[in-house]
Length: 231
Image (cartoon, rainbow, N blue to C red):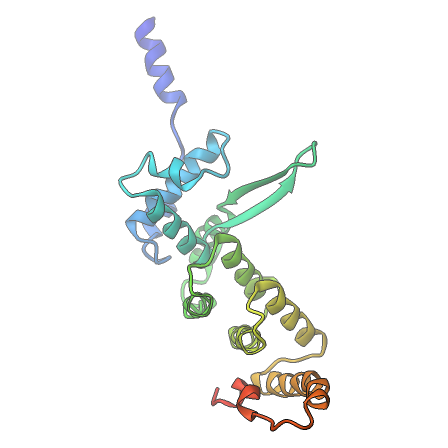
């Protein structure tokens, strides 16, 4: 009886891994390290921990917590995982990883549209990290994905808004988001239209400054318009 019970315990502690994941992870550009991290996140979720820390993940892997953080950022960049937020009954904010984008790609996109999946602009994330001078946080990566997926902003306009923020010395995501929302409200769809909007905005910002310094020689280099570059 004791032996039967021990075997039953083994069966009770099984975790279901979709066959599609093992067969198609390479088609989703997932490497083996990322695959194991995904499986560990899946395991943590089945055990009631929806938001394991990089340290908790590293305890069950052969990579460091720092490497786990890098892998988590990569998975969010590839739109295979998102971070969800909700409030419990005590109004406390809870965060969790959602693997729904991964399952959706496995069971819908890959199976029905293997050659027509929307292209993924991987260059946009390194550009942000270059301008910010640091790796992006998972939440910042998720914000970019929301701009791309939910708000259907083009990568070109997102890059334009980033450079506009750099030019105005307001390099933060809230400012970039305001730029994108304002452009969307005004029907800006192309870089050329963004160029004109940026020019008009800076002219409006410069007018009070010129009035205060009308006796000083104007240094036009301060008003360099990045949007005049070739797109």
